[in-house]
Amino acid sequence: MENKENSVWSLIGELNQKRGITEVVINDPKRVFVERQGQFIQLNVQLSKNDIYDFAKEVAHFNKKEFDNQNPILDGSLPDGSRINIISEPFSQGSPAVTIRKYLRSIKSFDDDHEIFGLNSRWVELFKSMVASRCNIIVSGGTGVGKTTFINLLLKEMSPADRVIVIEDTKELSIPYPNVVRLEVFAATRDQVGLGARELVKNTLRMRPDRIIVGEVRGGEVFDLLQAMNTGHDGSMSSIHANSPGECISRMENLFLMAGFDVPYQVVRKQISQGVDFIIQLGRNREGARVVNQIMEITGMEGANILSQQLAIREEGELVGTGISPKNMDRLHRHGGLPLEFFNA
Image (cartoon, rainbow, N blue to C red; front, side, top):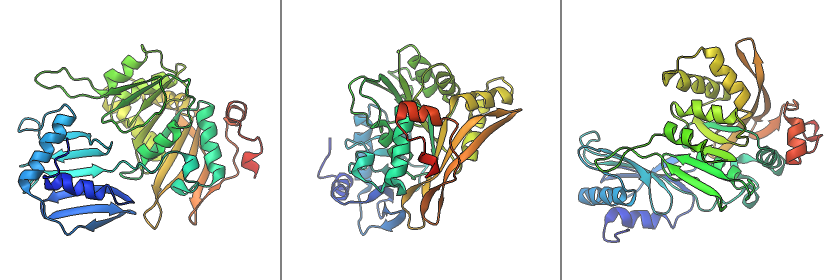
């Protein structure tokens, strides 16, 4: 697929040899940037506008999608697993605008990097026990803080015996086990019926999953995911775009209601309180590195309000426990092997 004579493919090939690049953005042929450690750096390169269009068409073909006047936005992936978005003229000025979220091959598991996401071995032990005890987890964070990468780390801790159904907009999650079915959202084209995230999540319930993994909830599929979490599909996971655990809960409520479900908000909150066990909040530190900022447990409801408690928060560059023992402690101990005295240390 890669055309070495194309200036865009050539640039991507060169950047693939460099470490620490998390994003590549092409604003126009003369303005190309890479992100490293949270900072954008402009490159001294000049691309061909025709090459950008040819590159876009080749990426569309690779993803079995269309990129033309009727389909000016392309979401997909590159052969190395990186996520890509391209928007065409006249919606972008001067040339198509290309944004590539790099797939970080170097991150394989929690054990490969004991300081990943600013964690020490103690907190890694907690996350491993959450997965082993089949807790339902939401990973929350803003743009570019590593939500997909973190879910990939959690997925590596699953049992190979689990049957897992994965639903994504574009293929990003990596599960090295055999009993996995990957479903991908596909927009309708002239030749193909489209299926959205909600239809795919609903269909998973007929596919005998042990765990359901949704790359990111953005709409009405949150209803079906919460239904699954509440009906025996423990150990399910997803991510959501939010800047705090409280905002994460509010966003789930809003997605639920904006999808047009005619239900009282108390019912929505009950679904969340009964379905979600933990919210892991990601962010960036002062140096721009991706870190876990908070760990919150949802503990139930009181009246119309969702109850939660903070288990850990990042202070002075370190994730520290609040001294609160989780409601799910017995479950984490019995099924996840977490020492009973873990939160007393």
